[in-house]
Length: 194
Image (spheres, rainbow, N blue to C red):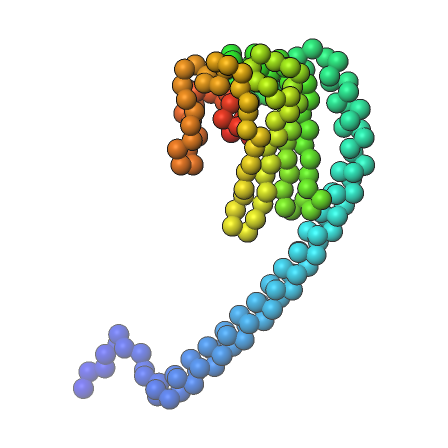
């Protein structure tokens, strides 16, 4: 009889099954221990996140009067917000000539966190009286839920002939934004880009 050199000597099926069962049991125990440690880390991370939020909320309250002082000074600088937006590398690309005319009337911008920072924030745009719309304050609010983010905005009360930029109606269709060529038109379309 010729010995087949390609085959390894065969162990008894019983011995192989016992080795596999021992390995599987060790693997399951290791995975369970690993999951327990991961759960412990997750609990610590959640606690740390809550503490960080508490500190952020505390310092947001401390910052508020300083922001108010800064806001008072920026109001005295002509076209401050227009210049700030035009100086921003990303936002400057989005502002059309019409947007720039509207931004000349922007006097202040305020961001307000909710008491529970995790649940959302709002951005308020304050304007001096303008030939474009009746409003002097437009607010956009972002509320975070498990299901997603809910965005609400002040409806704009446009003055006669000012509500449709460049003769194009920016009605929302689904979740799509207007094409880039139509530009930001920040104050139009409930300032969708923010």
